Amino acid sequence: MPSSHDPSRRLTELRAGMSVLTSAAADLGVGSQTEVRVLADGRLWLAEQQVAVSAADVYQAARGLVAAQLDAIAQVSARPVEDHALAWLVTLQTNEVMVGLEDEAAAFDAALDSPAFGTAALEDDAA
Image (tube, rainbow, N blue to C red; front, side, top):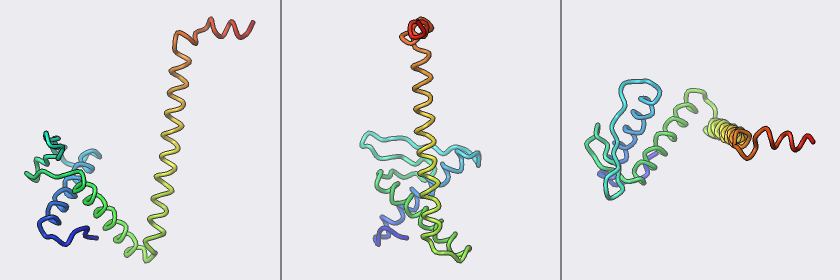
């Protein structure tokens, strides 16, 4: 789903999208990690594409990738896009809850390990 009708802007978004996709694939062990550097002006330098992109370009590219994926899944499954989008959303929300629980558990464990909450504090509570 193109976000821009300007061919130059669309090309930049497509390049950013390719970089997002290849970086995500590399994170999952496919190929090699592509180089991305932050430039002084805040843009990202995509070494593989030899282009600098803004955060807006990356965001629009990621939106385009997700929209294309949702559309392809809907076409293959012959089910509406909404079914798949809602399923992804529920999965992401579940993951968010799980991460929150893990963070709370880690904070609780850290508090238990702190000197302020040592065995002396437990012994005082028991008395």
